[in-house]
Image (cartoon, rainbow, N blue to C red; front, side):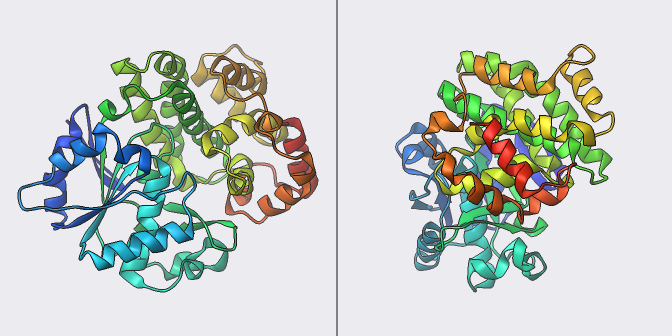
Length: 373
């Protein structure tokens, strides 16, 4: 096993899920609430997690996580946490159960309403160290939410909003590549492109954080080298290991900030789009938008990717999307072009806009969306 202490305690290797009981005991948890979704609840993965609990541990189970977490689901899970006498929360799944877990742990620790803790309302300063221990077990390789400081939730107003604090990073993470063996090709591609987008956007962010930048570049090299092989063969153990490590490392770079792609995927997520697919579709146009505002960083990206000098990164990304059978554009997802101005306006105040290398404008965002159609 590789034990990594960076932002969180991380157990990483094939079979690591067997350590769940031991790690919960170290956190002082005896009655966890396992937060997952309906698909995973019907899978052998959940049974493996339950079987790994230590003697004397019992788990409550919340299976109502939607594809994009909602405030309603957070409230339902919180009520179950409190009603069943739980003392910790385990997230089993992709970014959605992990983000929902963070929000549940926050409200269980501090009370109040999610609206009080939004980044856009200065809520980061209101979040204190959580009294509720959290443990994340990712079952996709892409979101990086297992080491991310954000929880993205669609509020009852319909707005997709961000809670953010270093205190939201799960205390412990179990990364077991066996859990992503056999992941469907479309989901492997979408989550893998999510990880690649994280690497690119954080590296291009003007925020100064060399350790995060270095992690992002290593993760980008891994993901680019392995994404096609792991997508084509869901049973490829080395490919799954490499993509899970790339996703983890990409999540570790979030402290450097994201950019225009993620600002735009916030309103797109409100329309029900898969986050990774939306990222992949938008990335080529955002690379074109930022091209004259990044200094020599595109040369750095080409070098890490093993591309010839002068390679068009936007074209390279679009070609990779095509090979992975990512939808060709937002239009292929049946969106209405009339929504472009509204989506651009919603993206402008997003926190990720502040760390885009080229300051975004309403017109700029509209053009990115048109190019991504």
